[in-house]
Image (cartoon, rainbow over all chains, first blue to last red; front, side, top):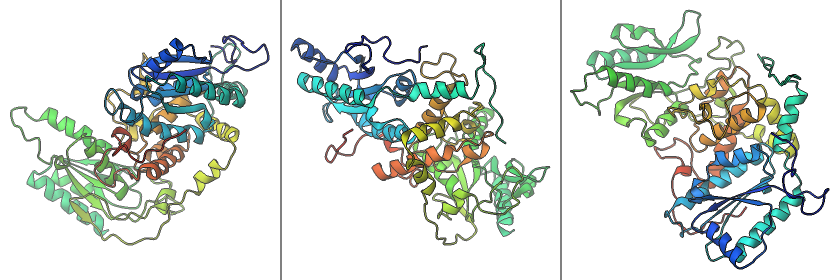
Length: 175
Length: 301
């Protein structure tokens, strides 16, 4: 487990420039197909995006997003079908309701809210797809590396929860 | 003491008539602390008490008792709609009854609800530390003095003026994101993953907890800080739109993690976004239902 950032991303802009790791959950019916269209149209899409194909944006459990940030993602992009166009009728309704709640939870505990974005891209919107990813990657690049994971590791190390052999010791009892 | 007498009388009557086979209430334990009681015999009804230390939310026991009663009775008879368990509830606990019936954990007919007009619970209740006699913070904020659902009401509900005060949340949201990360890391750092918060929660009723799986995909069972953080945030998220604010999780936490801050933040968010107050009616959380209409959706990140 490496806690440094951007180390295994192709350092596109040279050694010192930060290239964010972006995880994209793309709905298989709309956004993934839209991404395909962007490809066939030879539109430029930032290579920061690692696309994960999901059957529906409703499949994207908040746990998955928290997991992504926990594992060192700099941004998470969730793309689904426009409301009313869901292949499963109302899967994206659930996404539309969940994401704002998750958003406020994560920003309450200190994650920059800009790092999570939900948007809708249909299968015919290759251009929109490339525009959204470009915008998102740029906004994350400006934000800089996500401190979510490194901060936790740093806190642990500073509070000497882990000794030099890598063993955990129990934290002090509060009461 | 009249509430105690009323509860005892009702317990005796319910058990004598055979309407229920178990009454869940409060008793005074051998060390003088108020604790949950399970009364099966009419003669034991005199153990029941009501005082200002009845802090426990007894609703989580309902499903367990219903299941064990179902197991013990012969399968030949089908009396599934009969009231089988009676439970003493405070106004906050009664909302949990509504949430669980909406989620089909049990049906409303299976439970006889003895609602108590609550006057607030004192701080330190359950641990024998009621010395200062102050109300718990959640009770100071609470204006509900009458249960939202009950079959019989014990006591007269009194009107109280209380403001739902979010000043503690606002103090946190005023901090910079970095300071908030620090604050929560320092809180979650103490977690020993004893799962007391989960065990005591009426809403945490998954047979296998997502966060306690050997083959965990999403979060490990260890006590690494990031795993503990994911556990707490995940649990808070699972309670969004369902948490009734009984505050049991925070009360039982041996490490004094301010879990209720997360829950109240989400309670406020959900109320603002969906106009939903958990358990005010027997309606499921808005997060598991579809949108009412496709008009008026203006989600932008």
